[in-house]
Image (cartoon, rainbow over all chains, first blue to last red; front, side, top):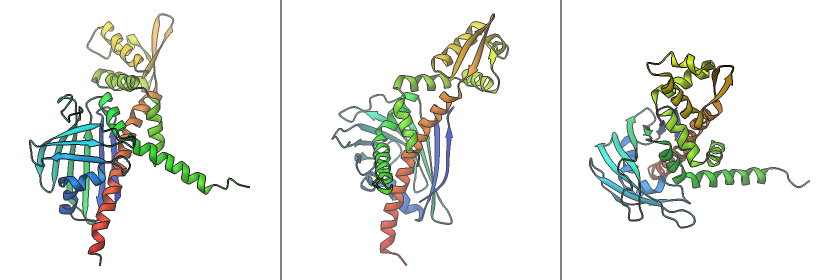
Length: 166
Length: 122
């Protein structure tokens, strides 16, 4: 994986993230289309995502939950708005209640994924646009466990390296 | 790695974050912030740039003030507005945190792809 570009537009609450993978477009598309493959990377190992449904066509819905290390299950849903296999996917991402139903169908973040063949394999561009600060903050929290866990892991690593005894 | 930013995000309360983004969601207020960051100026100077009443501009400044994006200081008869680039930086840090999530997703995708490559490695 190579990070090609990452652009943050603070005024419009938009993050554009471009990476390149050593695999063809069809293979990278599978990682989105197949829920069993998608849940291997959507959440981190200690905070995994489980997709109960993933209707991979325009108008389709996905329902998923994350499992926190404490066993809590915050839920989310997607509404797929456009699919052009294997090149383009657009979906809305929102929060769901305990039953998996959308809490507010208008409170969604928009995600547009584009896959293009490149010299190395596939260039993937993900554009995330948020509606509000509250929403962005919530989305970050749904992925926060990994950040904190990683930060702690890094601190452990640094402590292990430094010559404490002496 | 950008984990430092996530810790910064942790220190922001939900309502503080909300105020920052709500304040920046308005085009006039973004324009005010841009002007103020270039040069501090009075509310009446600012009001000249917009086709709205002094009171309306003052309201916008008040929203920015509550979001801690600007500060107001009374100087004689004038109210001088200063920018607070620190708060703007925090807004950028929120997006940094989300960027970090995508970094990690992308590296997991890379790992899965390298697993499948192994079988057909040349």
